[in-house]
Length: 133
Image 1 (cartoon, rainbow, N blue to C red):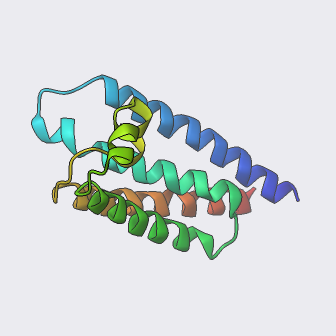
Image 2 (cartoon, rainbow, N blue to C red; image 1 turned 135 degrees about the horizontal axis):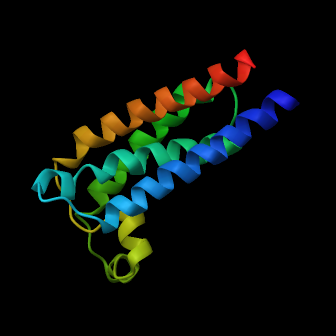
């Protein structure tokens, strides 16, 4: 049981770090266009990998979670092509924009793959670190 507690503690700390970085990034913009637009997808993917890992802390979830986060995020990106009134209402709020986005762009996909890969690496390091101690 202490191993699971240590993993959860590290995951919560990691969530606090990535959430802080992601929120700071969303408010502080760089002068380079590509940094402003797509790089946030990396933080988004890592956040959801860590968040899901809080609830599914098995060895197999270390690779399954990033894969599912990638698939769901790609589906959400395609949903941005659909603009029914209820989704437009959700997107009118800041949290709606952060969760489901507003504009489809193919340029987001490489960052989703990078973010899911880094999410996998982060989960792998959490599990490895927890087992060493």
